[in-house]
Length: 99
Image (tube, rainbow, N blue to C red; front, side, top):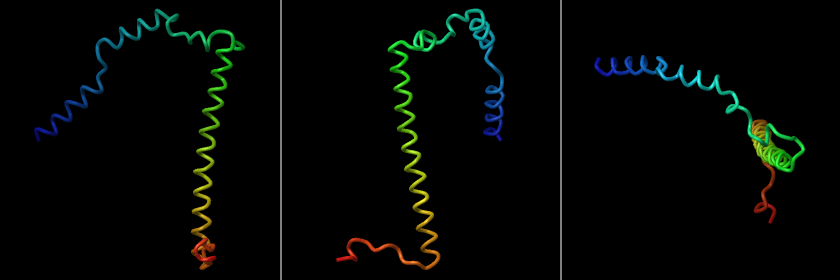
């Protein structure tokens, strides 16, 4: 039972916010200038730095979309192969079988 009481005490400590949390929130609210976006995002949208950032974002989107496309294509391939094997159809001939 000693272990269970330790877990209960740990849960109580996690639920109670630290006493300095209110002070940190108050400081953040009173100084909103430090919470504004960086000069790249907040500044001119046609600057070379903003255009470079946009190209970086588009490049990362392209990489992510290509990876997701290949994942979907793999699962479509697995599904079609599984359906073909369940109907009793043979798998396509491999290169070794052709020679």
